[in-house]
Image (cartoon, rainbow, N blue to C red; front, side, top):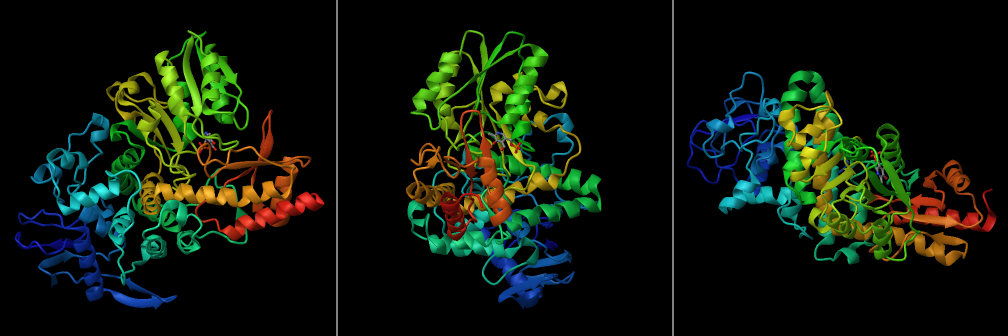
Length: 598
Ligand SMILES: Cc1ncc(COP(=O)(O)O)c(C=O)c1O
C-alpha cells in the first residue's frame, strides 16, 4: 500500500506502509502507538470483518486508490498482509515491499533526514545492501542524543536496554515488532502467537522471574504460541526445538515470496534484511554488528574457527572430552591433515568447582598451545563452564579461546562482556526458537583478519564479518525469521525464560532423586552451574534401552547420552512444555524403577 501525504505539517497523522511515498518535505516517523492506531482505524474503515473461533479478524484491508484517509491519499493499494510490516514503519525496520520493480522509492541519499549509513560492507556486498530509506541508525541516535519516539521505539526493539525489562503492553508490542492491537488481527501474522504473548504479559505484570516460573497462567499463554503435537512429550528440545508458529509462518511467507521471482525477491528484497537481523543479534549478545555473522548452525560457526585459524604442524590445541562430537572430529581431521596436536582433558560430572575446570585447562597448556576450545554449556550434562576464567587464563598466555555456545545463547542470560571472549558460535534453532538452519558466529573485530572463512571471500573482505556469509545461494527466509524469534524471546525476557527452564528441570529431577537411590542426576541443581538441560542416570538400567522404551511405549522423547565416563538420559524441556508433560515422564520413570523395562 502506498500512501501519499500532501502536506508536511501534520504532526498527529499516521504513516502508511513502508513503501509510502511522501513527496512533500515530510519524512518524520511517528510513534509506534500512532502507527498502530492508524492501522487499526484503517482496517476498521476498509477491511472485511469476520469472526472465527471467537476472535475477530479483519481481512483484505484495501483502501481504494485515490481515497483520502486522515490526510493521506492512497495511490496504489495492496492488501495489508502483515501488521508487522506496517508497525515496522514506525520503528524504521525494513519491510518486504519496500521496493518494487519500477518504483521510485526514495533512496537514503535522497533523504536528507535519514542519510545513508556508511557501510563497511565489501564493494561486492554494497551492490546488494541498500539500507531502507526509513531505517534509523541507533548508533546515530545515541551519538546525537536524539529522542524521537520512533527512534526510542527502535532502541526497545533492538535492545539498547539490557537486563530485565518491564513487560508493559507497549514494550511488549514493540519488542514483538508486531502491529497488533486489541481488535485488529490480521491473518498472516498468526496473531494467536502475539496475542498469547500479550495475554501472558498481563498475567506477568509486577511479578519477579522466580515467582512467575511456576505460574501456569503465564506459561500456558506462552505455550499457545506453539502448534505442537500434545500426543507426544518432547523432552529433547536441546537437539532442535520447534519454533513458535508465527516464526515458522514468517519463514514460510518469505519462502513463498522468494519463489515468485527468486533473483529479485530473495536477493534484492529479502537478503539485505539480514542487516537488521545482524543488528538485533549483536545487541542481544552485546557486540558490534560488524562482529556478528549469520550462519546456518553452530557446526558452521565452530568449524569456521577450527578450520579457519592458521596452525602449523606441532601446534597444540586443548579441548575436553565433553566437547561436541562434531567439533572433536573437526580437530581430529585437522590433526590428520596438518599435523597439529589435539589434547583432550577430562573433568568429573559434575565438576567439584569452576576453578577445578580452569585448573585442568591450565595444566594442559604448554608454550606450544595456540587454541583452547570450550563449550559454554555442555550438550551432555548441561554443565555451564567458567568461560570467562578460561579466557583470562588463556589470554595471559597468548592462547585463543573458541567458545562453543550452541546451547547457551537465549537459554540463560549473559552478554559477551561477561565472557570476555573473542570468538563465539551458536545455533539459534535450539534455545532462541528460530527456524531450523540458523546460527551465528561472533568474531571480535581485531581478530577477523586471522580467521579464514570456510568458503572463499575476496581479499577486500578480509576484515568484513560478512566474509563468513559468502556461502553461495541460500534461502533468505530462514535467517530473516530469526528476527521474529528474537522478538518472541525478548517478549518473554531472558531472566523469565531461564527461571522457567530451571523450574521445569527441578520438577522432574527432584521427585526422581527423592523416589529411589538408584537415580543420579549428573547436572548440578544449583541454578549457577546449569539451566534447562539435565542428565539423569538410573543405576542398573541400560540408558539406550530406557530411551527406546520411553519413546516406543510412551511417546516420550529424550536423548540417550553414552559417554566413555558416564551415561544417562538428557532431558531438555522448553518454554512450551507443560508441568503435566514433565509429570508423565516422572511417573513413567518411576514405573521403570519399580517394574523394569516391561
Ligand atoms: C555443544 C554443541 N556444539 C555444537 C553443536 C552443533 O549444533 P548444530 O547441529 O546446530 O550445528 C551442538 C548440537 O547439539 C552442540 O550441542
